[in-house]
Structure formats: C-alpha cells, structure tokens
Length: 417
Ligand SMILES: *Cc1c(COP(=O)(O)O)cnc(C)c1O
Image (cartoon, rainbow, N blue to C red; front, side, top):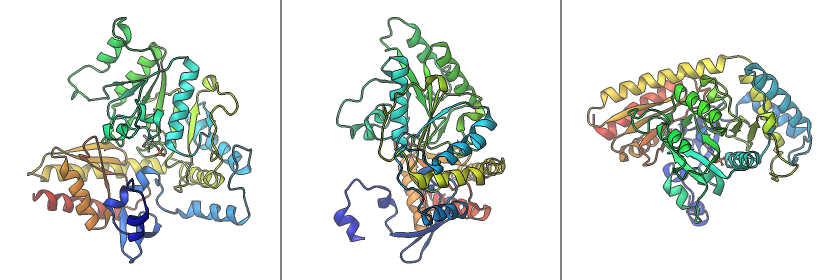
C-alpha cells in the first residue's frame, strides 16, 4: 500500500475509507489482493448499475477489441456509435414517446452538465442559473457553480457566480408551500433576481443526502419553468439508467425536461461515457462549439448497446429494482424502529436509499463498521450524516439480505442499541 501513500496525491478519498488493495470484481463482489471478498453497496457511486463485469456486456466488448474495432474515434461516425444511437432510440426514446437529439459531450457527468449549462445560456441569451440547496452537479467550475456543498465549492479558488440557490423539496420540513420564494422573486421587480436561463435539478439528490423530490414537486417545478419561460435541465447522471426504477428518474412525474444529463451507468461497464439529451428545437449548437478528445469512447458504445438490449428490452429490471428498493426500505424501517439510542431517518427511492443520523458522526462510523464486515458503503449529505446505499440493480436477493443484515449489525454495534 505504500506506493499509494508515497506517490498518489492527498486528494485521494474513497481509498481512505477502504484501505485495502482491490484486484478483481464480479457482479456485486470485489476481491482484494489477499483474497478477501467484499459486498458492494456503492456500485461505483452509481456507475455500475449492472454490477462489475456483467457477462452480457463483457462478451461483445472482448469480441469488439479482438476484431480491432475502433477504440478512439473523436466524433467520427463509427459502426459502434451508430448501433448505440439506433438502440437508444429503439429501447429508450421511442417506447417512452420522447423526442431528443443526442449529444456526446465528453465522457464525464461534469462534462454533460457543463454542456447543458452552456447550451441553456446560448438558447436563452441569459446567463443566470437556478440551482437547488444541497445539489451536486460535478467538480468543474460551471458544475460547481450550481453545486451546494461548501467544501467542494471552496476547491474552486475563484468566485462561483451566475447561480441562485432555491430551496429543494422539503427544505423547510413541508411547512412552507412549494415554490413560494421562487415564484415571489421571479415576479417581484424589486427582488434583484437575475432572469434565469435555466433551472438544473436532480429528482433525487444523491450526494446531497438521498433526498427524493416528490412527484407533485417535480411537476410543479416543470410547470413553473413553462410559465416563466425557463429551460428545465434534469441532471440524471446518478439517478438515471434505472437507479430509481424506470430508465429516467423523471418518468414517474410525467415531465419532459428540455435538457437531460446522463452519464455514470450509461456504458453499463464502468467505462467513461456521457450524453446530453436535447429537445430538437433547442439543439442550437454550432459544429465543434462544445468539443472534447474523448467523446468517441467506442468500447463504451459497445457495452452501452449491449446493456440496453440486455436490460431494457422489457420491464423486468425496473420491476425488480422497485421490489428490491421496497425490501431495503422495509429493512431500514426496522433498523430505525429498533435503534433506541440514536435518531435515525429512512430516505430514498428505488435502489437509492439512505439512513440519516441526527448525530452526523454516526453515519461514517456505521460505514466503517460495515467495512470491517466487508461491506462497501459511503456517506453523503452536507455533514456526511447519511449512510448511503446504492447496490447494483442486478444484486441477488441473497446478497441483498446479506448486506442488509450487515447494516443492521453495524448500526447496532455503533449505537449500542
Ligand atoms: C457524479 C455526478 C456528477 C458528476 O459526474 P462526474 O463523472 O464525476 O463528473 C454530476 N451530477 C450528478 C448528479 C452526479 O451524481
């Protein structure tokens, strides 16, 4: 392990929670160099919704590499990209009656967000953005400007401007009518609010503490944007690709955002890939106006195509995600009820779930206790007060029960209840 401590920057982070050297991984399990097996309830922060090295994706990937399929393709037309686009239209857009143009913005979530913000500014001719309290949209400057967390914002080293935060759903514990403040400052000529180009929102805040927005709230937001001529950007980088059940997390609200950011699990194999979906009338980019060397990660297109065919040809995965999510919720409700020495709140939607501890330190302690029992989990929330659970959607029922039992035991060991 000394090579990492000697040579790798202090910026490293997850490895500090899990100080072992991992080597191989299959499905929901990783193995370290000493042969110990770990159950993965983090799934690459949501980049491994189908688990590690899923066979239905690995086979076409190996075949593609074996036949010298193009690996790096800028934004050239390639067979792999063409097949991805066709499959995306057939399996994702058409069945949902959605009409979007597809932009490949460079392979990270932050790149998709930067693209979306730039495009919204270009379309509207306005520069101001509306973001939400506790939002997370990535670590580049534009994405950070609409991100809530003060530690992450502090890393920018320059003023983060042109964004105004609004209260996310339930920010005032449900006591204040939705959008009271937002509507008021939009209407009041004396409010000093700069006219916004767009609103950027997550339907469930992953990094912000597993905060799900209610369906009515999302519908109200879409309606408010329509009335005030503000573009609606949904950042589905973490909650998209089935994490909450349906392919897009906003489907349950029946809304159609103007721009959608997708990344993390879209390649299905943990390979870097991102998409910006744009309503056709808003595809106002000029050629090369948002560029990037790694927009054509063709092996990612191959695995993304295979993933759509394997998992999105019917609704089996969506139904199983919802069922597993309910099972986690039930187990968490029991933990909350059984924990007498600490105040615990159950949160989440689909297979994005959390346990929030009133005493923030406990969340990290529970994750550490779980790691001792070889279960990988992380915290989220502004004070790292939420123990966050993102298992692969393809986890088996037995593995899910195993992990839930470890969580219950870890909570007991930390709280002494
Ligand atoms: C992870 C994440 C991002 C940033 O993606 P990167 O690939 O880390 O740049 C943006 N938005 C949301 C909601 C995310 O969860």
